[in-house]
Image (tube, one colour):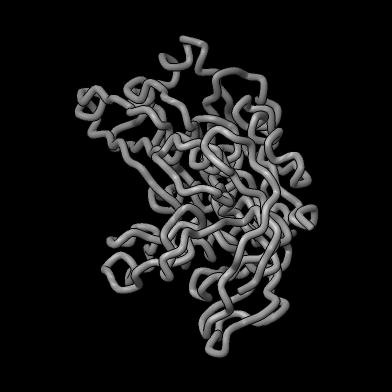
Length: 347
């Protein structure tokens, strides 16, 4: 076993604090990664505070991991020592169900193994990326291409793939009108990726305070949803709407913005239910859908796409001692657009 430094949540109500955790020995198919940077995702806060259900504590969050391979198991073929690699939201799956065999491990019928807060194959609870090292099965480690720095790459392992996957699945590209609801950690990557795919991109945000940023990141249009005229002006406009916010919104109102056969896809995950007026779907053959992360194959595809188009997250790098402050700032929407922990500060 390897003892490593980490930051953990002692309970749902206490601040995160320094600790040490044990990582398993490197098995034949495992990779040991020295973590260089770990992104802070809004879902980290939801999870450690018990918003999505009870947790086992202490819990080390973090599923946006970028680092360097320092050891490989005897049977590893996909990675070598010195490789620049990443780990996202999952570290294992059954590998046998129809979804896993199709490269959609995130929808494993037996349940994928989350990077933290999940029961691992040895019965222990997985611990995440707010730590100096992690041991992961090689099949769940992706390569970070040259041309993307590790700090801006870390958030791509969640925010990047969470937005790339629905944009890719629902065919964002030339001739398609795509709206992004919210310009935060997820939304800013959705704008960058949709623009790079060639879509006409609109940001729908509560106010216009981030309009300059949105246009700089690739949006063609920017509207305030607090303006009642926005919903009337844009009715029937969009082929695809990606909702990135983790708070309850009036889904039926946003469905009215879709064109015939349009889809509104939720990637934000509020704790509250989102009621829908069924006539908002029926009158326009519209769809209301959800999307999680991508599979490993699609995650690698996303990283390659980002490298090809020079895309990375907009980040603020912080020391570990600022994690709790960062959580409060995320909740106050006071970050542009992703906090990334410099894990060297854990030592």
